[in-house]
View 1: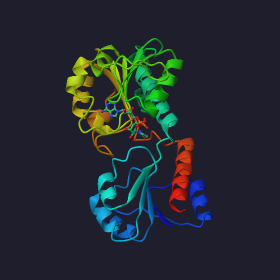
View 2: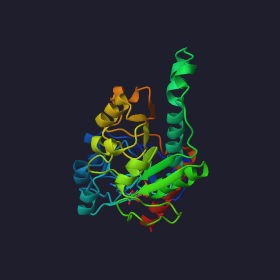
View 3: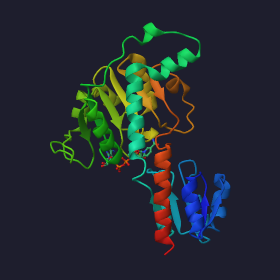
View 4: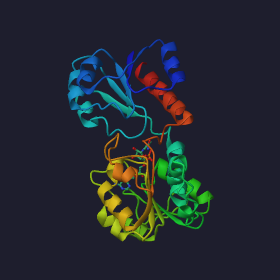
Length: 302
Ligand code: NAD
């Protein structure tokens, strides 16, 4: 197969693909050039930077492209329906990054509880603001509400339980009053909003924000909100207003409404712990993503 890799890939997996006899080209294309370039490839491997929309798919369909692989979970950068209409398969690597993203969510929770992000920033600016960070709090004993209890949400649940948190979960496919396989109770969204000290969002990209002014109003005063899912799941204006008023005590954000984000009022807020969409950016997750991609290519090159 001729395979185009646009946003980088684990080196070992690249070598494996070449050893299997595939021709692999590593090259990023701007959106207006990507479609035409794809005509000469059987498969393309993207991460989140490359967007494969209808325009690129229409061009690619004039050539030999049969497979789009998203190295990662969310396929919101690919027009999946249009690809299907053009008989181009879309695959992702859903299993590879759950531990890494869950650990980053936990890191943001700890960062919010102890001001780690902002304290690091002020120390590097030459300041010693010990008194400003005197009202930290523990995670132990607090309630964590997880919105979207799939692979990543449940992984976070397992880790957070181990440090003494009480967990409750809400998911559109889970009936309130039932329990997950690990014993975590499913509750209604309203119950989760009302009872949680921390709320972490792990749902796929939703058509409209799950965390918005209305849902924030139902939350406990001083709640901490974590989002490592998709930026669009949180209304950034509503979150900023709630941080300003103190309704939301702190927020940990890895994903943004548009990326790279230009919302400096939000990312530079002293109570925001921020990262530039690095949830799956670990050596382990990237290696696993690489292996999942190799397996998918094996399937399609039989
Ligand atoms: P998953 O499919 O295993 O789990 C998602 C869960 O959310 C499911 O249980 C589903 O029933 C539930 N759900 C769907 N829509 C919902 C809604 N509107 N409200 C509440 N629950 C809803 O997915 P996953 O692998 O756990 O990934 C979760 C999220 O993490 C996705 O948004 C994905 O794009 C994101 N992600 C981010 C990074 C990163 O780098 N930050 C990396 C990987 C995945």
